[in-house]
Image (cartoon, rainbow, N blue to C red; front, side, top):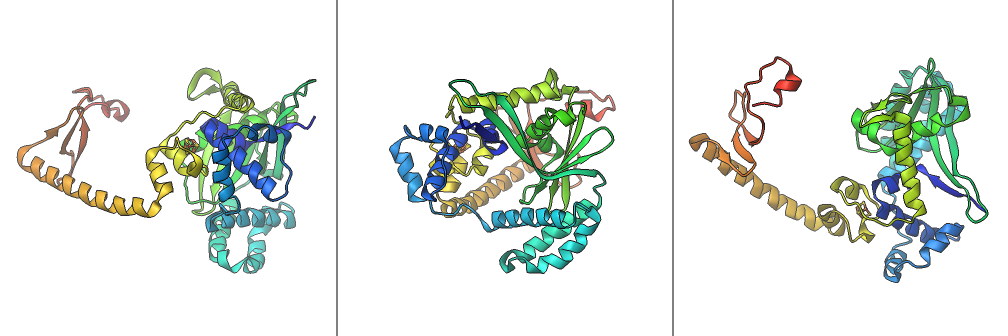
Length: 367
Ligand code: SF4
């Protein structure tokens, strides 16, 4: 039987919102069909009973490209970096020179943006002193072996760059979008957690207990970093090691796939980034409003922003003369200490001091 292969994008969708994964699966199957490409047996099975109205809505736009210029540029940068590593035989010292020779050949419509990314990529690589083990490397793991009635389930991921330090691994992933991640976001991202866990499961790395994960953000020349200690306690799941905690997250995503879960977990952040939002009736309302009619949303935003400015100006004038305005849980009041008069919300349920211990992390909890 042909195995079911789940890549990290699909697993990440299940971990974020199963409805997104479900809609993306239908979209990809229809798109593959429309382009005369292969659809997998499990995809065929799952799209048989889909609501015909949804199929119709997707088919109506199936030939529309979802690729923006930014995404096109991102793909181009990834390809360019791969080519640079190939032709320089993974010698990081040769890559900046390679860019100088090859950037002029890139498509003119994305050339200015590509030059910016390439310059940052070269700077980031110049500080990257590890022994390179693999570039653009696919790593897989069998989660469920094949049985008499079910195909094997394999999880897989492609790594941009894997390097080795002293008794540890360094993974680097190119990020070409506008978003800049904090280290906290890097540590919590499904990609980084899954990527670390998957490498920990590989035979050659069984003895490695520490993995450093780097996002190199080529738009800005910045980095986001996460550290994964296989045997240390997971920072958000006390009592579990990092490896066991991440394994739970991965296996529950696989499980959601196997159950063909379609639950919607709308959140403003995930819905705003969701490419299936136009087919989803459960989306976060604000994100949905933007997706449905971006022009009307911005026009309304202008009005609401102006209205809000006036409301705040009136409230600030009021508290200058008459003192704080108390709501149910917060007060609108003067911010202290501030040389200039400025106002903002203050939590009325904050514990009252005095609690001047000299430790900011403790004193910050008190007024
Ligand atoms: S729009 Fe939101 S709720 Fe709907 S599929 Fe996407 S992430 Fe899930």
